[in-house]
Length: 409
Image (cartoon, rainbow, N blue to C red; front, side):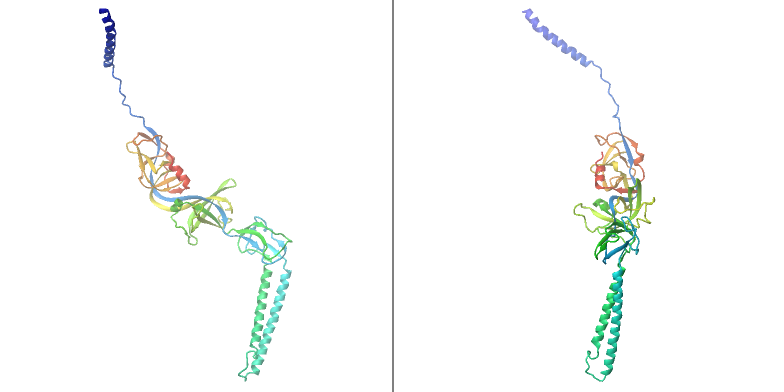
């Protein structure tokens, strides 16, 4: 019996002893040292929100086109005798200088015939007047004498024939003048369709030309860009006025720029693109308004355009990289902590963003990306001098550029 008792009690005693030893060790274990070190702050690049008078800039693009472009059409027919050396593709058109001459022998003969006809009708008028004078004297005592007896209709007929002869004379003179084809404006030749010795008829297209006095650039504008200009749909500038525009393009391996004026806006929105088009004009692009290096603003050239929009006094602006999705801005507050703030956007440009509310001048905004941003997290700011330049001009890029900047971060 005692042997059975020992077999049962011995394991229990061992287990109980093990539990007691574990409890003793747990109770007497040393306490671990507690760390009081704060989380390491995250380094971020920052820039200051700035307040200044801002001129909004709208960036767009367009193709240069001539305001005057037309086909030269012959007004008389005949064989082409001579062609000007400038009547070639790219040739220069001088006002009043003949581009080509049509054989004029027939027209000179027609002019002489018309002059003879005028002289003949002039004699007929004088004869009719003399006959009318004789009839008036002969019938001066006849109170019932008719107009026909007094030769009045004959005089009117003679005068009408003279007027017709004079009209034919003018037509003959015009036809003779039209044998020399010229234009009343300065321009350039685009293409030619005739040459010396070719017989042409009235209405034949001789070539295509454009005027170089004024060229236009048709510029598409989005709704937000139109707001930056502050102009109504259908705007037309007064003569000599208009918003300043700078056109630029790379030509022959160099960058060139030309001054222009925005003179009008379309009165309707394009139904396909939902864009409104503005027209910028450049006077004398092949002469006085060449680029500084002497490059003309050629028709057909694709150019970038920067339009000076409305002026915003004392406006607050931040770098584009500071704007987050949902019109939010991350700031470093006075305690060195992250603060998330909603802002009201007045204008998004290609370089900076104009904020109408939510920020004040001197606020320190974060311009670098932050992973897993949490409000109140500790930050160490690194001032980004490149982003902290004073902005007096804000460029308005395309809506795609604005959306891309808003998604940063």
